[in-house]
Image 1 (cartoon, rainbow, N blue to C red):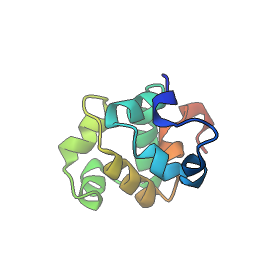
Image 2 (cartoon, rainbow, N blue to C red; image 1 turned 45 degrees about the horizontal axis):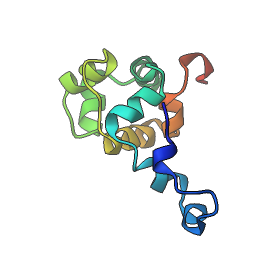
Image 3 (tube, one colour; image 1 turned 120 degrees about the horizontal axis):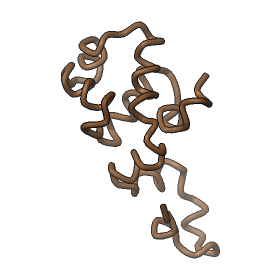
Length: 106
């Protein structure tokens, strides 16, 4: 995946001032999930299990439904960036933790 379209020339001083989140927000939802290499669903399921939450409980915490959580965990749907950010808050982890290869999850 080529992320160069989200960055200006290296000598552009504005890029230096962007926080990672500001640049990250320019990535659309489909690209966000692709960054994970397809591990988002299993990472979400693992984080939820470790937290001792049911799909219904997590859905309530995210102002969503049990079915939405089920769809995310099975890769049938993709949550918005805002929901992924809220998941990271719920699990007290970074967005990267939800997206990285599952073998590197703590």
